[in-house]
Amino acid sequence: MSTVRVRFAPSPTGDLHIGSARTALFNWLYARAQSGTFILRIEDTDRKRSSDVYLNRILSSLEWLGLNLDEGPYFQSKRMELYASYADILLKKGMAYKDGEAIIFKVPHEKVKINDIVHGEIEVDNSLIGELVLIKSDKTAAFNFACCVDDIEMKISHIIRGDDHISNTNKQLALYKALGAKPPKFAHIPLILGPDKAPLSKRFGAVSVFEYKEKGYLPEAMVNYLALLGWSPGDNREFMDTSEIIKRFTLKRINKRGAEFNEDKLRWLNGEHIRKLELDKFIEMASSFVKSDCAPEWFRKFAQLYKGRVKTFVEFKEELDIFISEELHYRDEDIEKFLKKQGVLGILKLAKERMEKIEEFLPEKIEKEMRALVEELNLKGGDLIHPLRVAVTGKSVSAGIFEVLALLGKEKTIQRLGRVIQG
Image: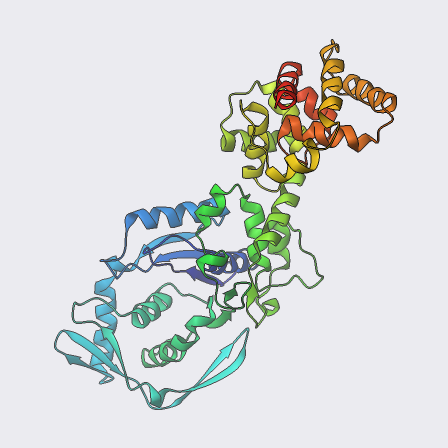
């Protein structure tokens, strides 16, 4: 039976952001890799800023990512009596004193060694701290004290958290020692940086996990990408499913340096995960995302055509909109490049006339007629295909044009060509 017990301890004062989600993931991965226990603790002692709305969004985000809990959630706001009893121990030992309603810890003036799994040995002089508040004048527990008491009570074996908490570790080690408790092992993970090498900000992706869900990312891709932010499997592998990440995950392979967040890389990984989905699973997920009332058989053909071409469900929805919307929006540069060339409208007019005569509007029959037209007019294939694509889709890039036209249908194809020809 594993004795590994780890915890994720968010404050319900905001959404679950990328940095916190990565911390939760590393804890969860370590628990799963070691057959340990993953605990959720809600640090809600700041009652003014804490909100049930944020709590529910944090819980939903963890659930969406697939980070299932073994214990919890525990709420610090419901544990005030426990913190008071631990503060009383330090009062009786003469290691703390009362200042009105507050209780203050007299930090021993000594050097403290932090044996960090990621960073190695860190030495801090606690004589520079002075004193530490345990219980505030409003009788709520201060952060560092509540943390220590909970970690002792919950028998936490490893604390895996961001580098920004290193400055709390020496204070907490002094408290463990004063309480006669064996401290957990510490692993401080590097902060996530933006492309400007500064800590991640909203400008470069420090948004909530919820927003990535709404952008059409897969939870498996988010887990894959977040795992690679500050950890390496050791063989330059990038695409991995969650079970493989768990098998390979070890704290010793966490990097010391900050990891750069790159949404292009996330989108690429998401596209790879989409491609690996079974078609039926993709259709199920896409259907709930786009909420389309298309005929199931048609939607399946469309999904089959575009599944390998999109990187997010938002992109999939945008491609679908081209097929089902009544009006197209053309980019000025595409009009200039493909539709305003001399002779193009004449070519499209001939293509339209050919298509009107096709009885079974199937990809192979459309292709046969268009290839024949290209040959008769002594054109290059692109001279017809590029303007045709822009005219009927509003885009210069799409899936195979003949499959696109067949899916769009004869009536819509002729209608759209007619509008472009008439100007």
